[in-house]
Length: 117
Image (tube, rainbow, N blue to C red; front, side, top):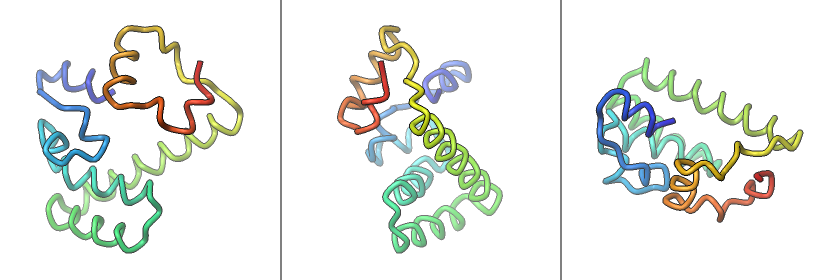
């Protein structure tokens, strides 16, 4: 989704930002590093790190961005949990764009890949 959005808006991004690469996260995404750190801390379920990331995002981006980021994160958690719980597989990974993204991000290493085709 990030790649398509960036292409449509003629913005250069580096998807390695979703894997914790700070330099990549800051490319083409306003507050990208802060958003990445916030998302990572949520995924790691680390309250101390989350408090730091949340405060940093609030300071750098403001309340509206923090609220939007929390809402997006909550929605993704909901969607992933529902899909995993009922066994919905990821879309066809034979699509060339998906294959490229899977390879670049090393998605085969995640346990949820068992629910994919």
